[in-house]
Length: 115
Image 1 (spheres, rainbow, N blue to C red):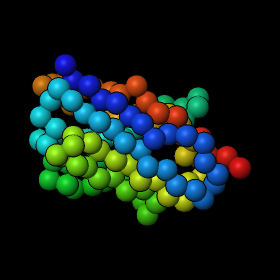
Image 2 (image 1 turned 90 degrees about the horizontal axis):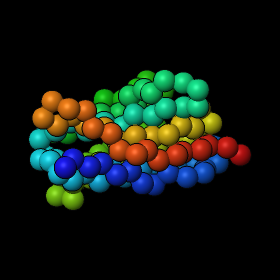
Image 3 (image 1 turned 135 degrees about the vertical axis):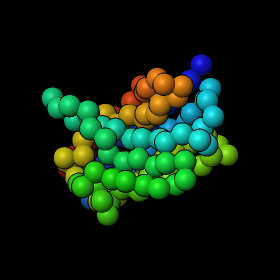
Image 4 (image 1 turned 45 degrees about the vertical axis):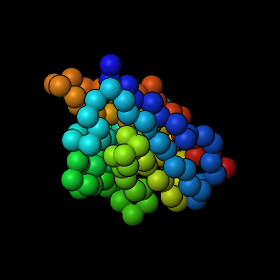
């Protein structure tokens, strides 16, 4: 059974940092692309960052220079280091991947940025 479990969210002041973690299980982690999405209050879910099996990364424009996605295939984890956080980053953050033709999501972790 494919499982994704996020952790690391919380309340942080503007300018602060958080590191999100997503633990995967039940699939061949090292061969899949891993994604971080977020859903701000009242808005649609959007792709924030992506890392391929080869380690190539892409980011939403607003995250460039502030967020860093990385992966540890040995531990089957993907991380999202978020620095210089802004109130607009407030959202539920989800880990995502596609395995055997299906799209899988974690339960999400809340990130709230406020002074």
